[in-house]
Image (cartoon, rainbow, N blue to C red; front, side, top):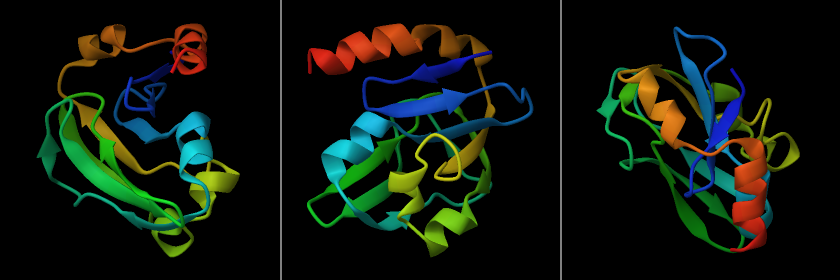
Length: 124
């Protein structure tokens, strides 16, 4: 499965069906600037799609990180907590935020594919 994108600028990679990986997009980190702090959710906590699951702070602003799908947090990126700049240098790789056990995998169908998200950000 390919990466999906939310209107709130999170990405979801559900290639591993046990736990989807969630992070912020290149567009989001570009808008934020240099990330200096991340507040990650607690492992074991359950969120609904649209809930605030964390916070990312940069030298310019703070922004909420929204849960793109319903699910339970099964892992957080401790490397990102230790080095928040990973959200800038590798937002789609080492800069991931958390992993979520999907409660309803069909919700992924409502998210945007890369082409649609690219068009969405051009018009934003």
